[in-house]
Every structure is written in C-alpha cells, then in structure tokens.
Amino acid sequence: MSKSLDSSKKAEIIMRITEFEMPPMQDALIVGRKAPIGPEAARHMVDVLSPGQYEIVKAEHEAIEAIVVRKSLFNMLPKEKLIALLMEEGSKVANESTIVKAQVNIVLHVSKSIDL
Amino acid sequence: MRKAIDIVNKDYVTVDALWGMMQVQEIAKDTKTDCFPVIKDGKIIGVLTKTDLIISHPNRIVLDTMSGSFKYIEAEESVWKAKELFEEEKIEILLVCQDEKIIGVITKNDICLEINKHIDLMTGLYKKDYIIYKSLKLLKEGKEIYIIFFDVNNFGYIDKKFGHVVGDSILKEISQILKDNTPEGGFLCRYGGDEFVLLLDKCADDCKTLTREIINKINQHEFYKDINISISAGIAGGKRQSADKENLYKTVVNLINAASLASTKAKNEKGNLTLGHIGIIDAQASMI
Picture (cartoon, rainbow over the protein chains, first blue to last red):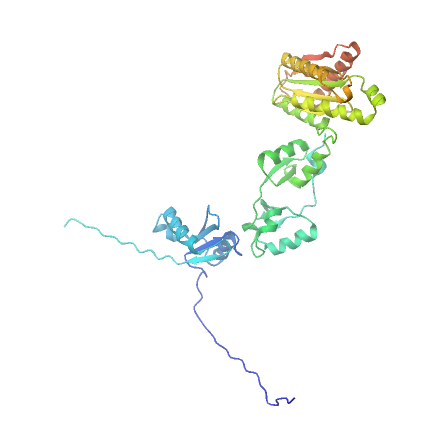
C-alpha cells in the first residue's frame, strides 16, 4: 500500500463578530421548571451586569417556573397585563426544560384633542 | 424525658445558596447526607431536600432548587415537641437553638428513628414518655388532667398457666379495646408489662364513667381460649391553681404514681376502680 508523502492539514477559520448584548438577555426570560438555569441564577447573572433592573415573577404553571422581566417595562404596561401576555405567548413555545428569551417592544399610541 | 439536645446532629453540613447542584450532589454522596440547610449572607434561608437532590438539573444553583422549610426549637424542648413541629408545620429540618445560637439540626429521619424507640412493638402503643409529655402540655395550657391507670388482674398467673404467647395475645386484645374506647383528645400508652395509662382532659365524673365502661367491656370481651380477664383501674388528677410552670414534671409523675397505687388498691379490694388524689393537684409536686 502506498503512502502519500506530501499530505498537509489546513484550518479554515470563520469569525463572526457582533456587539455584546448588555445584559446578554433581552426584555424577558421565560424559565421552564426543569431548565438548566433557574430564575434566581438568571437574576443573579443580570444583577451583576445590570443591577436592580430585572424582577422575578413566579408563575403558577405546570411547565413555566418564572419569568424574569426587565422592570422598566412595567412603567409602560401594568405588570399583571404584561405577565399574562408573556405567559400566554410563552407557554406556546416554551416547555419545562427550556429557557426562552423574549424581546418586547411596546409602542404607546396616544391621541388627544385639546381646546383651541 | 428525651430532649432535642439528646438527638441533635451537631456535625451538619450546610450549602451556599449560590453553589451549583452538581457540587452539592457530590457533597451528598461523600457525606451521605440528603438534607442540607442553605446559607446566604451567613443566615439559613431554606432547606435543600432529598427530592431536590434527585430531580433538580445539575446545572442549577441551590437557590433555584431548594424547596424545603425549617423551624427553630430550643435544645431543652422534648423530642415530642419536635415531632409535633414536623407534623404540624410540614418542615424538613429543625434548627436546634441554645443561648440564641444554632447548635445543630434535627431531620425528619432523626425524629422518626427517635420516636420509633418510644413505640411498644407488641401493641403499637406509645410508651410512658408520651403520656408524660402530653400531661405536661395540657397542664401548661391550664387544663384539668386525669390519669387513669389500668392494671390487668392476675396477669402473672395467666402467663404461668397459659404461657407468655397467650399472655401477649391477651395484652394485644386489651390494648385494642383501650384504643377503641379512647375518646378524641385522650392519649393512651402501654406503661409497663400489663399496665396501661389513659390521659384525659375531661371532668372527673366523665373519667369515672368512661373507666367503668372500659372495665365492663373488658369483663364482657371473649378473650383468646375464653380465658376470663378483668382489669383494675385507679384515677388521679385535677387542676392546678398556681399559674407558675415550675415542678410540672414532678406533678405529673406523682399523679401517675397516685393512679398506680389506686389501681393496686382496687385490685386488692376487688373493686375494679379506686380513686386516688382528685382535685387541686399543685401539692403533688412535693409528694416524692
């Protein structure tokens, strides 16, 4: 059997550089009951990077343990309405072993008429 | 009476709230521990249970996993108080305190092992420590208590004539009759060989009526091999006038003694029921 005398190895490098997301989660995390990271761990993680900006809301749901939400969202939308919305939509995609992140953009439409 | 300090585990292992579960599972394996108090900022904030160790994801931190709760107990409290706390508060661990410091823990497993030592294997009834604890508890609550001491007549003769196996069978039947006739709020124990104690917080007349009923039921019961069995009883009890909680233990043991002597008198006089000391029981503390 012949052996090749001029073999060589090459490495191909593909680099993808993006800006680091601060914190590395968006507006909300939907944490499953058996997810590898629990809500307290998630809050500690973001508390180190963005102290005091996130809140844990425990859920009464068979698969979802809690939602970690950016507190500033509650300035624009009542807490119970936002949580209900996140639970409704989140429960369609999340299961007990997943952690799903959600980006929530709230646009308020205001229309007023004033006396001239 | 056995106290929390007698069964406290002083070499308990705590885990930090931010430790990973994989690390804790290793500690559990090495130390053969399955229940850990959880520490955060130097304070115990919760309990990691055996179930938590089994079902949690190994990547999770303790804070996200712990599901158990705890309560405090003074080192001088009785093991029966510890048992009640486990049952009533649905906790996994008791933290034992002495001079306002935590000196150790008692787990559910520890209390089960201890309480099992106070159960009479033949009849399934508790032994005398149970009645002493319950009597002390009722007296501390300011209640009236009555000790009814039952003693089987001629039991030594029955053992000798029919054998100890037959004797044991009769004691089981008697204990069942006593169990069936113990009213709600009453407490029963096997005090010794053929002696049983019933503790009631009812009035003296109710206790006498119930005791006579029990004596009659035993007289009428068809025992193994149709052996004729009868039982004698002595009653002692009443209420304390003093609000002070000193010498309660002495009061209780002296009441038991008075009831025991009354049952012996009943047996000797073939009257089946004799009253010992009935009324104000404060002076019982200085009897022996």
